[in-house]
Length: 429
Image 1 (cartoon, rainbow, N blue to C red):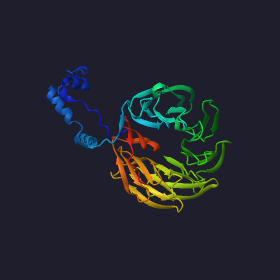
Image 2: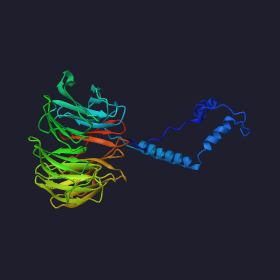
Image 3: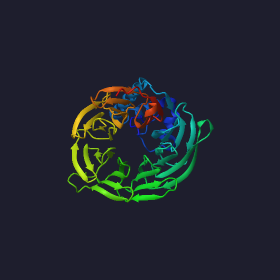
Image 4: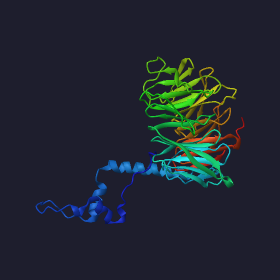
């Protein structure tokens, strides 16, 4: 959550009621034998309380006031480029998805709700209020027939999506499941199969709506991330104990594993991301310190140490004429790597210093979009590292975004309690 929200401080100017409640004078009997006891007026007491604790607290308060003032000035100067701003959530928004054929968005929030709404008007079309914890995953299936939602505690729901008159959706729950705390959730990109990783390390694979389930066993270590291979038949996963595995989804067997005993392996990790190349059996696992591990179906092939910690990772589209992948860092840099040559191609510098990169995705063969900790969306030319355009409107962290290429539509969700719809400028690739 935001760490720059100023703490509440009592307002002494409102009179003595709050002050008396704070120090509870009436609950402190006077000691008649105490010769040193003196009468103190309210004004004197206020002055003493204001001076209590020395100058350190005053300095802290001044620093907090200055930080709050800078933040307000920053927010006041933000240009809102969004076509639609959705404000119906009451807390930070973490998850989002766009329906493949209708003008429908779904967003999930810390307010324990998932809302389906119209991307043209912002009108709420359906509310999912059965979750009891922060909704961190919301996904329409590849064909738009189903919607899956999941919360941090592991409560998962799947809804059949049908259309009412006037293009309003009807959602009927067809499946639900309670797992241990969930770490990630997504649909298979070519089938109505739902995959989820857990804090206990198991990976669940369900066929929807029947609920038929396969479980990829864990090692009592959180499955931090997972991604489908290019052929859709395998799953590449990373765990907090440093293990990396490639699973066959049909047989539930491990095809390849790198553990902490392997010379190229990781030790205990705090954050890991994985990516799979779409047209070849080539996989990357990267962790927060900047170490990247490259693997094929047969095992690890090499490692690279980046100069920057890695928060997010993405391969260029399969159609790209260049063999590139991008890494985003919390120090605000995006490094573009040529994995054919195992070499760094260029660095993209965010225009705002120390504006951490939280998510990156490729919009086209040569355009990479970064969502940042200060609410900016920066698009770069991956060939040169030059900034192509910036979209603004959010105040704080953008946690997720999705791009609907055929409509040039971008959906974003943020720590500032809002979701926004942007029109993306021409990419010019």
